[in-house]
Length: 192
Ligand SMILES: [Fe+2]
Image (cartoon, rainbow, N blue to C red; front, side):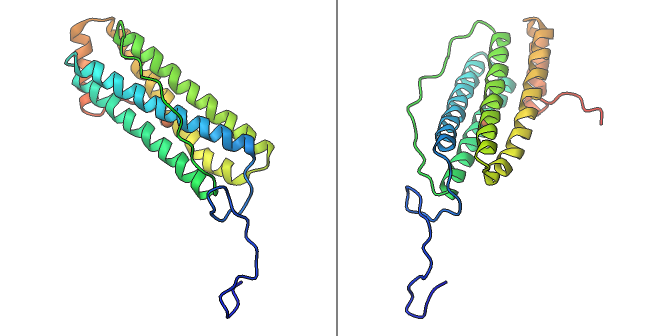
């Protein structure tokens, strides 16, 4: 409440950045959020490097697919930064290592990508567990749709990995998959 003189009669808690905070966020949870944000930025750099690898080998559909994945990982990092700011926390950007650029085959890339998606899901689940332990309902609500879309990503990568394995390094088969990716077709069959 504000009095006629403009002075607030309530004392509002402030976070490290000086913004008002409605509910304290546990230190362990903030630290885990910072690490997860770094993981999303690393994933974005990794996918950008993979897009380049495919572009250099004339597989433009794969390059397009991984370029879009790089963008969406960057958007995830933005979402986590927005959330930390909304909760009155300071976003700490950590140094990123150079992404891997040497690969022996598309199959190896797809396997590594699937594993990276699975690791991101594990990290989200850990965040969820810490949020639940500290009864931070705002965070569990924030994480719910994120975990849901992460499971869809795992499914997409499993599908693409399966098709690339199917192609067995045959150029004609790889070009068919590449053409599908150029048309934005990267999801598994839907039976429902
Ligand atoms: Fe992500």
